[in-house]
Image (cartoon, rainbow, N blue to C red; front, side, top):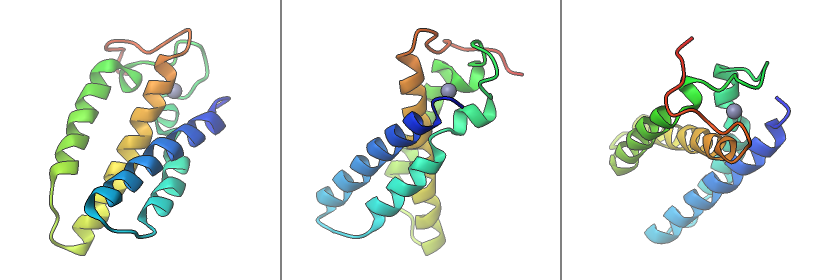
Length: 123
Ligand SMILES: [Zn+2]
């Protein structure tokens, strides 16, 4: 994971800004963006944990555009969900942070020379 540090910084930045903007829109000011920023930094390499970077063509299905679109739709649905219980709010928060960190990773990989596949193989 040569780029683990870059992915941690990228995920922390995008997720932290997203959480901060959401709080600004709701007119609240809590520690949530800071917690999410730290959590996102640890989750920034999730795609490389699923498909380890042992060789230049390691990026397959879970690094693919198709997977990213599906994940993006899932995140949109999660974002629109209004949880009622505390455990549901926690689930929504962790899901948005993990998904945001994951998509940030794919966006960063897409800008490299090897880019990411449209679909990729499952295995
Ligand atoms: Zn990757």
